[in-house]
Image 1 (cartoon, rainbow, N blue to C red):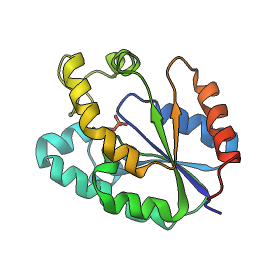
Image 2: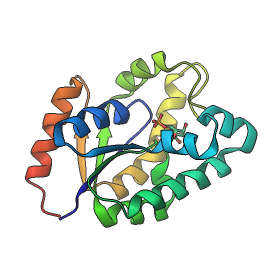
Image 3: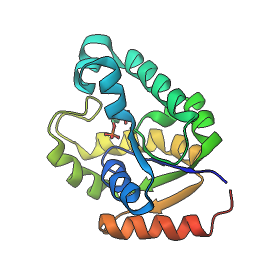
Image 4: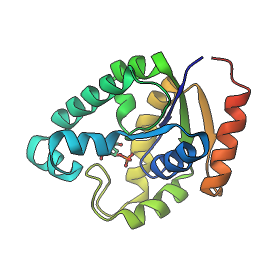
Length: 173
Ligand code: S3P
């Protein structure tokens, strides 16, 4: 039986907020991949992208997922692009049930409005068509990685957590 729960999904899908609430509810330890990358690099995600570029960021991401791969009893809140490298998925799946949080484009745009410019890959003005095309490009990556999918549109964090727990109870890994 896998003891970790990994949350994947697009920026603004609610991975971090859901991860915090899910960890609290289950008693598991929260591991936030972006925060661990920032600690490893000694700078913010924004600075890593600006000073070292996306490829270097993806290398930090791979290193953090590798470290988490062998740990147990975690809720892992992944960054939106973790799924882009298959090695991350393979390592996550060893000990995690992978849950894909989805939301409508409108909900994502709404949630991202409040995030300022901390997300280097977010189109500058959160333009709907750019978000839409990035979502379309990412779709097959999330699909391939996910064991379970949970639509979060219109739900509170608590409702999302309940939905996840219900799905997990019916999921034999
Ligand atoms: C990224 C998502 C971000 C962060 C980085 C890259 C992506 O995390 O890892 O800016 O490629 O989708 P969130 O999904 O938590 O915003």
